[in-house]
Structure formats: structure tokens, C-alpha cells
Length: 317
Image (cartoon, rainbow, N blue to C red):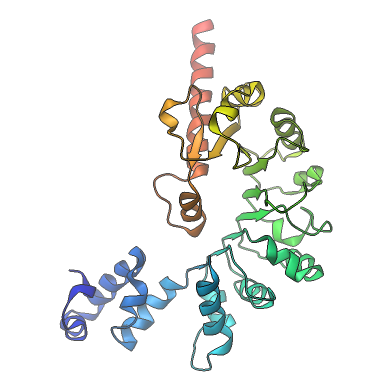
């Protein structure tokens, strides 16, 4: 039964045993109908709002404005900093408020985040020195982080925000200069298993050189390295690069995989390449992937390489 298609939703909810009704509405909220479910009754609202606020996505002026208003400016709202700390596990920031202050305050309130993506370069520009303060904020449960390279020069991997990461994704911001990361500090991230980096053809190092450099500084725990050509590079340009071909075939490092943000049909590629669209990447980081996410696909490619390598060794003997 879909609780949202009833002509009398209140009576339908009351007709069900409470535990069953709660399960039904929570399942509906999980599939994206949470805001509509919250209108049924105050009781249903109390069931579904923790699910709604489990993931917060600030992707445009409207969603960012509404979230800031609800949390900071609505005296009737129960969405306090304590509420966010208790319920919010995933945050994606692709658009910030006018000063960035309220956005940063929301993220800092979500101190039990497990996954965070900050893709708006304006977040760092607006906050300036306070952005460094943000990187120094401990997020004890944060395991996955995606951020642009438009960050303060003072930011580096030894900051508290990086300390417990298992998955790190660095995206090139179109308006940014190439950030010279201190890759050697990666070795301090003892839990890091997956890293993803977007490169530009200039002035960054050649892709194979970049892979080798970053992996040489990575901790022994590293299992997956995903490298992305800059998004305005065509797929033909990617595959025509000898450097990239070597990465695709596992010659540079068995853990290194190439991914591309393009609409190209991967079925036509000669080499194993991950292809994701912008909306798919948003879904990956917002916690509702379409199909298998980038990390899972990379793991499958590396696992297949290891299987083929093991088979070749057995045959050789």
C-alpha cells in the first residue's frame, strides 16, 4: 500500500497497527516521499523526519535557502544542532548561502557525518581563513570526503577532518589554479583505502606520473586509486593517451583505474573505464546511487585484474 495515494491519508494511517504504519511510512520516506509523508500527521512526521534529515543536499539556491531558514531562522523548528548531530549522516554542498557562514555552521553541527562532499568553490572563497578552521574541525565518524581543489593553501591532509577517512575524492574546480598538494602527508591517513583525483593536462603532472607519485606517498592500506581526466576532455582524447591506456590496463599500478565524467557508452571502450554522469555522481555522494557507485566499480576492475594475474601465474607454472 502506498500511503501517499489514499484519498484520506489520516484515516488510512490510523487504520493500520501503529508498528506496521510506521514501517510503511518509513519505507516511503526512504524512497524519496518523506516530505509528503511528513504532512500526514505529527506522529508520521516524527517517524519520517529522521530519515529526511539523514541526508542533506544543498544543490541550488532554493534547497540551500530552505535548509538554512529551517535550521537557523524558524523558531518553531525542532531541527537544532543537536538534532542534526543525532540524525544527519550524509551532506552534499554544491551551493552555499550568501556568506558561507550558515552553510559551515550546518556542517559543523552535523558532527556525526559519515560522508561529506563540498563541491562549491565559493564555500572556501567566502569563508577565507575560516575555511582552515573548518578543516581543523574533528569529525570522528567521517569516512568519506569529496572536496574541490579550490581550498586555502594552508589546508593539508594533517588537518583533523582527514584523520579518519577511508575514502578521499579530490575534484578540480574550474575556477581554481592547480593546487600543489603535499601528497607526502597522505601517509598519515592510516585508514585510507580509496582515493580519487581529477587531473588536468596542464600544468599538472602527466596522469601516470601523478598516479605513481600519489601512490608512493599513500599508506599501505590503499586498495583503490581512481584518476579522472578533467571533465571537458573528450573520451577519444582519454583513450588516445598512451599514459591513460597504461593505467587502464593496470600497467602503472594494479590498483589504479580511470574514470570519466561523460555520456560516452563504456561498452565501446577497449579498456575497462568507469563512466559516470554528473547526476549519477551526485547520487553516489548523496547516498542513493543509480547502480553501483564509482568505488564499487573500481573494486570490481581491480579484483578482475588480480584474478587474471593469478590465473596467468598458475598457467605459467
